[in-house]
View 1 (tube, rainbow, N blue to C red):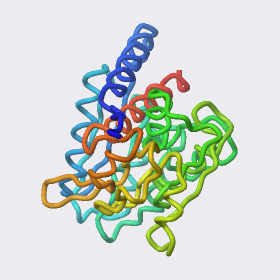
View 2: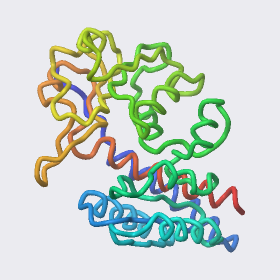
View 3: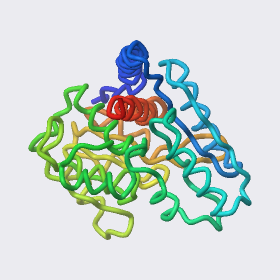
Length: 284
């Protein structure tokens, strides 16, 4: 068996087209959609990711605002920039790029962001909305994974999904989202992590497996039920090479699989654009 690729680039391009149309409609009504980013320090992957976000904005017609602060910035100085972004009506949504340099409080920083401008969907208020099933910006990577599975007709509703990883950005919110009674979700969800002794046995039960642990090659072919869908959402770096949590041999067992590059990443960025235009629509 050779797995069908879950092409995130293709779907993300379609979503960017939809966002472009919505941005144009807002502009016709006198609203220019604005997305902001705050980058602290010189972390290479973070800087590249922010640059890609701004390139995406230019493609769909969203105006970009960016603040690049030195790594030794004080918490008070960062708070002042966040307060300025919160108050700026031209910035409809924004993010503070994580991780932050040591000495800065990530929890404090996330709490300082206006929940209505939280483009990542990770503010505690918005995570609470997710728990309640209320409207609000969804975390970008989980939302992108759900859309990618649904667009490729991967059976999820009523199936067993195993999520490897319990992190704030992917594992925990994805498990909540997949368990909800909504289109493309409504699954039985098991969360496992590298501290679980029988992790491989549990993963082998999954009709859908999402690897989000950030450990290269963690998921191997012997851990996958034949025909299962496998999503590599966790990544790590070896020099300049991006590595997936999913070993390449999994493609010979799985029914569907994300490519190492061009799977979840483009979908995360597409969801960011969608959250931004939704924020502008709400504000207008």
